[in-house]
Image 1 (cartoon, one colour):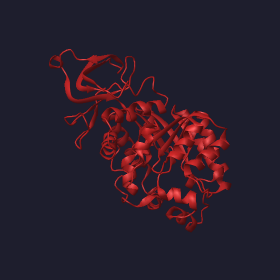
Image 2 (spheres, rainbow, N blue to C red):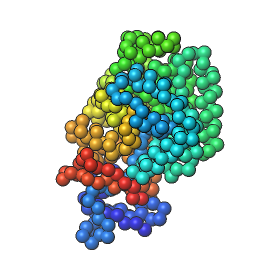
Image 3 (cartoon, helix red, strand yellow):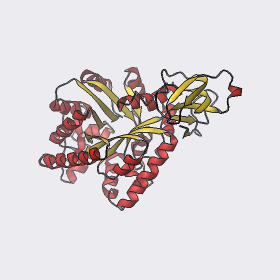
Image 4 (cartoon, rainbow, N blue to C red):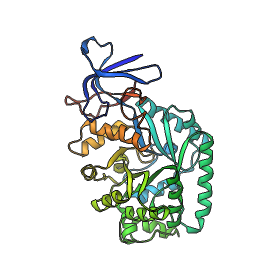
Length: 395
């Protein structure tokens, strides 16, 4: 039996912590008791900082870990895609797997209990099977040419069968509107919806919006120069285009869990459209990645005012210097006024577990649950994150 106590215990039943709180867990990590310490000075372990449930990283590309420190910053999306295309297959398979294992171990030790991960191939499958971390793998596809749709779909379903055989939860999923023909976007969305989950890169940059709305910009020019088909010019947002393609997979409403990743250009019209057709929409914020690529952040306060279910991801080491949830939260705290640690942890833990359908065991500290217990250190006098804050798994 482990008993831990700290200045703040975030159970996340509400954003407010228990001051001078304790939690007890059995040998399997199941929470058996929690509450306020009768006398903190008599606790065998009393930590200056915060205890919280394990994190849920809702957007990662762990198979790209071999690209750490290889990308230049501030390239914009068109420049970033050029770098991906140039560097994607330049590392031997064994080195890729070693980097996947290294970074999954780092995330686990820092307190990530679950992850929604993007995969284009099976490089990460064995590591995930061996890891104590829960994962749902989103099998992402690309394909701008309509005639390629059947072959791409055959490939992703073969990949899903491999994940299934290893006992991994996996869902086919579309990448983004600008890398897929309309036919492929609908076909793979239909297969993902059958599993109950989709993850979609949406409105990640103004370049994407210019491409869909107006048929112009750096990404449009790149694809035309490469002789690739471009998505239809709709005069509306790329989010609206995605919804239109979803409605060809099956009629609204969509009761599945759908994760909209990034949403840098989301506006009120888009939020209204999402709420109209999606029963369980979630947004994944990856602030450090957004700053790395094009130095902008999503309209977080607009999302908060509209009560969107916000989650937190790290994206990949091609567009980030680290896979550190606390670093993402500190970035958000520094750019959005009024964010408490409790609200940030609700996004990084509770909402992420709900997206993955694991809220009965993960995301909150409650008796009978096994969320993992994480310690966050170096808080300021008001209990907020500082540049020196970090996280450690205790259970």
